[in-house]
Image 1 (cartoon, rainbow, N blue to C red):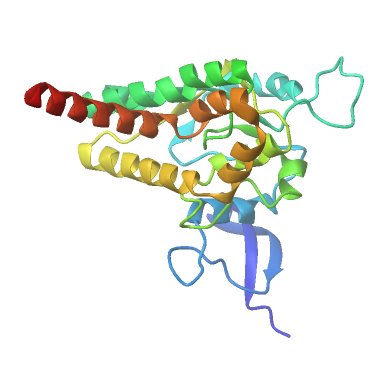
Image 2 (image 1 turned 60 degrees about the horizontal axis):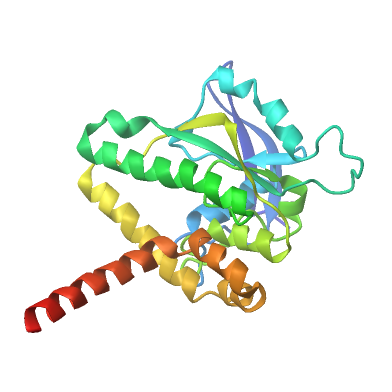
Length: 266
């Protein structure tokens, strides 16, 4: 029969000034991107499609708003030793499945909105990650983490792809790690650059997406299974590793309204 659908790996060729096809994987169906009709979340679907072409033991997925310079690139081989240190006697399994590191938000100089967004992103992506890693509850939040590629290929990909339940798709990869009692630590001796929204409307849309994703996390099956099994002490740290930001803001807002009402009436 004739092959109608395929995933294709291409590379830019300077000689022909065009794309050169390197690998072709036939598909029974086309990629189901977008909303409605049982389609999938775009980023997660593209990651799963690209993971089929990934080679080597470890994988890193970068967004188009990210990058680094050559000095940080020289550190990468030494950073990857965190998965399997040279002095580790048991070589059957890595020490961790995801490995996160610092981010520098270079759009902080693009006006007041960019500065505020950069401060918020750096606080969550760096300071908060150190704290969560120290407690052993850090998860994968969509940052440029390195991951065990073999492990991800055998567990459904790098993130879940339902466009409704898995709106914040990357944290479900962290749930996947946590439910299997694996680790995803944070290190401070590597830093990549990242750009964020620098206009009010774009920043507002981003935060509305994240807040909507937190609602989806609360009602997800993964969250339900974790909360049933981790116990009260781990639940306290798990709260800060998942939906604490928006839930805490909601509690603070309700408390302020309640205080004002009681102050006026009594």
